[in-house]
Length: 230
Ligand code: HEC
Image (cartoon, rainbow, N blue to C red; front, top):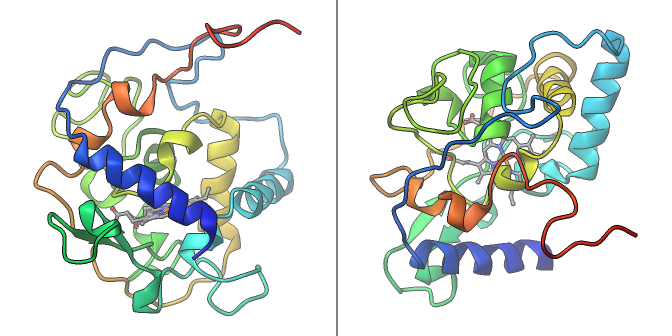
């Protein structure tokens, strides 16, 4: 486990202990219309889209959690294969027997139909990265809002468990997230590897993903309070 992951885990653990149940605030589209999924992006050829997706997967270190060290490795993105690849979330991340404690497990991102992303559409994968919604619990629809019950956002969202870093990934553009989904679904070889379900609290992490804790989407316009025009 790298230091970055440890730092993230500590951050996640304090985030989880600072439980605050607040609703998502309404988020309107930014100038680039990034709240809504744009279904067609004719700006790139299919090959360019796949290569963009590949490069984003590499430079966002998806494999650091989801398995494999390079696209040439056998377990490339095939999900955890050893118990030491699972994460402890909650106070137990700092002290082993402290409670509550949840074990979460990086899933198989290869397009295997039975155990990987083969079961889901590219739009469901897009929605997982933009909104943190568990693909298996979220209908395959365009989502245009982050507010439960509005714009196809589920009334009772089932969020992906920490430390899946979707609160950061969601700031990628529609085109980038679509390219990642295309690469994972169409250009990675399927690997059969059944990852056990992550454990989670009854609210499926909703209390951890309030706008107060993860920041707004879309982000505030530049320059925001702590930025300056160079
Ligand atoms: C710090 C570790 C970490 C990193 C880095 C990471 N993930 Fe994840 N990811 C997870 C965990 C843990 C889960 C399981 C969450 C759950 O079970 O609710 C997950 C779940 C997912 C899922 C849902 C799959 C399913 O079958 O439900 C997708 C899609 C996904 N990750 C894509 C990505 C992509 C793409 C990247 C890189 C851009 C990435 N992840 C980087 C930890 C990580």
